[in-house]
Length: 61
Image 1 (cartoon, one colour):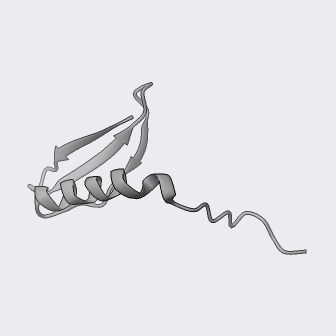
Image 2 (image 1 turned 90 degrees about the vertical axis):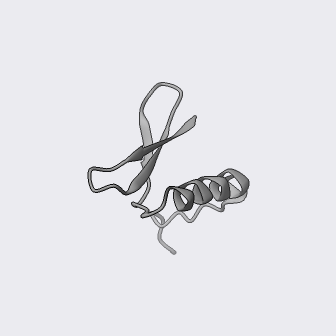
């Protein structure tokens, strides 16, 4: 996987997470500063492995 950072048409920044097969897995919100987008990427890289799964498709019986 990789993070792809792009500049939007209104001079803001957005990143996508792209799988090894080239498919976009996720798209970020837009950021007014490139540094803010890069900070978010760094945070995801540090923390994504410890993220919990909140499966809201199941119901309590």
